[in-house]
Image (cartoon, rainbow, N blue to C red; front, top):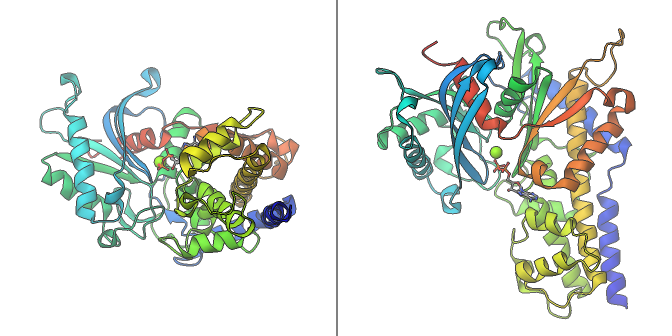
Length: 463
Ligand code: ADP
Ligand code: MG
């Protein structure tokens, strides 16, 4: 029928607009490397903030003691108690995780930090006797805060802006460690924040603890970001003393990257315009878990409206922003049943769409495929850009095989198998077979929390 033809035409056009051939991805990677240079050259020199983390030494593996970590992401927050036992005994950690109540994401700094401090206090109360700090000493905490922060030192920094679903006006420009410390005081918890780290930095530190070849970390979760180890000499905007290690960890904040080479569609423009942060985090909005399902929803709504894809009436639920979450998209995308029964049940449960034909469900799966593929391939191009920046994209003259390990973490990477496989194969495609042998993607599970504890240990005030 003509309706069907119209629907297919809309999907086809979307597919073409989302294409990411290798040549395009190479241009994305080149643009990424150029922006990285610009961001390192001067403050505000690029869309990439290239934030100096003040971490100039990554964990050696010899860190010891009991440390706490607090990980505030985009969806969840976690508290960890980490026993660091050096190389011999390794790491033992206990943790507690909870979803951040959505209303706290847009209210006041006070309310958010009080809530976190209370949860932390409850967790500390479960501490066993032999875990208590020595008399006269405070407990120490590594704070993983997954939003752009202008670091003032390794244990302080001001919030530049919120991203993902957060928007708490009065916190912008404030020192997040100060805000947390005040809340800890209010709940009567005597604790010292020894390190403030971005989740990418935590993941890099956590990854390095287990593998000395880790040179970069990438988060693919609610949002996306990357950090890597830079030569201190290659950071013109750094006017402090050169660190002994000669290195400095940089938080790229690549979520805010944009390039004319990244394919953007009308759906992306609309999503951006209606978001909490229009014009910002464009790379993030095409890649990360907060947005992928929402892009699929927008295309489905269009075929429903313009091609009566789901019948004469447009399903009302389909009009609700963010109702189609990426985990649901992922479940539909991975449906291997011959009649796509998971797709059918998700459409019914989430969108109240019933009576779909197999043909229609196949269209839904293909939309998931298109959106996930663009995101996965773009993130691979981003990683390739970092490898280019630090000269790890080619074989060295002396032919020695230098391994480059990239620590990956985040719910999207962990659970969306097709996304992960596509990202990994695209990276191999971009670097080529020979170099590809020396590039390793490693899942650094919970690396960001443990990494924060490790960095708290190496920056402990009792050292
Ligand atoms: P955060 O980014 O908030 O720190 P996570 O790293 O745990 O937290 O990532 C959570 C995000 O991962 C979710 O918002 C969701 O977008 C994505 N995600 C979680 N589970 C799945 C899944 N099964 N399939 C696809 N994406 C998922
Ligand atoms: Mg996280």
